[in-house]
Length: 171
Ligand SMILES: [Cu+2]
Image (cartoon, rainbow, N blue to C red; front, side, top):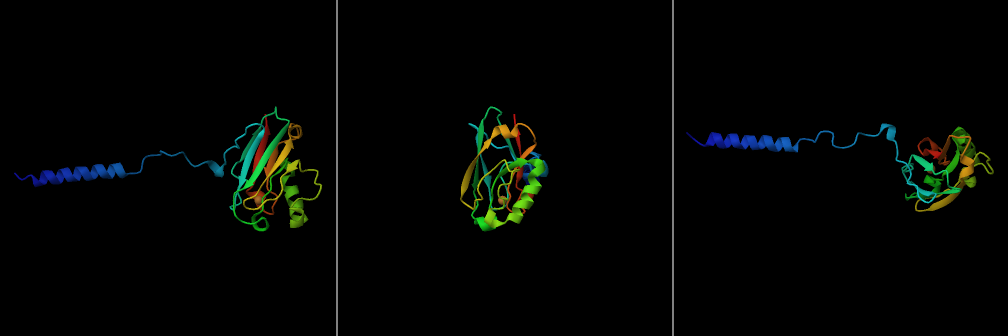
């Protein structure tokens, strides 16, 4: 009787064991979110911060404003590097139904007007247009958001509102 076959058997068993251990773990991570949904903004003290980047993206998909806030402040922070002329971002608050019209009129108003029609009464609030590394804060009168919704935030830089938009709720 040789011990070699036994050793081989043991080696094979170890190999199988190692292979099993190296196999991908079954469904350990969370399933991919549908349609690239983004998280809700972190809100504290009637304020929040929204980041925008060089990939034409906001980092949040929704902002829930406490109804007890008189004014709600949103700080838009451009965390990218591209200049305002190439990848400028602003954050405009308006009724969802007005977004397309504001964006179209803003595009026609051009860069000199920061892509917003001057005096556009449909705009409830907006930050400045900022480039990489810059930020701006806007205060929103929450009373303006308590009826007439739903409301959204979006970027009025030409073409950006396709990706750069989210919902605003008050409650
Ligand atoms: Cu933008």
